Image (cartoon, rainbow, N blue to C red; front, side, top):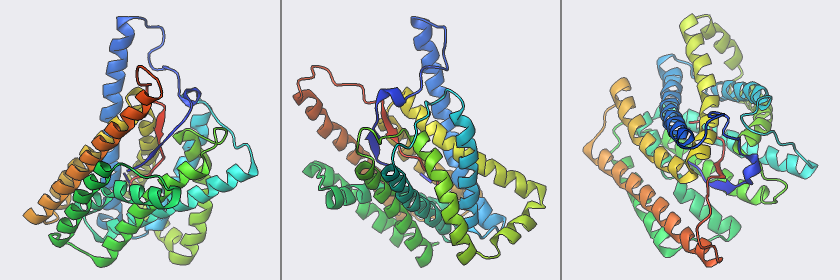
Length: 357
């Protein structure tokens, strides 16, 4: 649904090691490694499952209501976020000012737009092509950061983005299932994901306004639900009636329910993967996820692929990996130049919430 920029948050916003209480020394380290592996495997499985279920619902099950589907996702996120906030998995933060609330509403609007456009694209283009386009998120994020924040990266970092663009051009030229509207919707959705990343860095830059990804999701979801109800009434006026008719099929009802719950669990797992590893690890997993999701979707949905398309996708992914590596290297000297003999742990960097498109 699924790639993102990150923002620093204070470590007090992170959960304690609630998964391995009462253990000390080597036992603690061993338990944490097991937990980390389990969380990463669950993240991978959940991420790919959500993308494939979205595609199945919008095509195989003839549920041609991407706005209603997104509404179901956000409604589930609202309900589960509230109940999760009652636990100690992540400390609850509160909206402090009216200005902060307005900023969160603005982010919710961009957030939900990116999700809807991603779901719309899945109606017209295969998952493999969707994932290839989604891999260009770093390009949009870097360009928008330069325009909006005047935040510039090193020359090497910008050069690494060239394969990202070239690869997607080659992939598009070699895509046998190309659909103009689906392509434009996916590109627009990817652009919105990059825009939200930059907007979050700008709007919630104050130390008092920063929130963990799960708290931000909890406050954005109800706003997104209200926006989607309004949009659905205009764009999909028969959407609720059609959904009720389809829900009469128990299998469809189960798939829709599972899809919505998994969409929320993905956000929780994003949070936990970052907690037990790092934001960079989440980026690496995300790059691999796109390749696996594309391969699995080809096997399940039997959409045709070409050698040219596969080569283009490989070039794009290579560019994304090079971009991540150059960002990591360019940030390393900054930490050392501040007189810090050892780089500080960057695990408090949290991913923004997303519902895979």
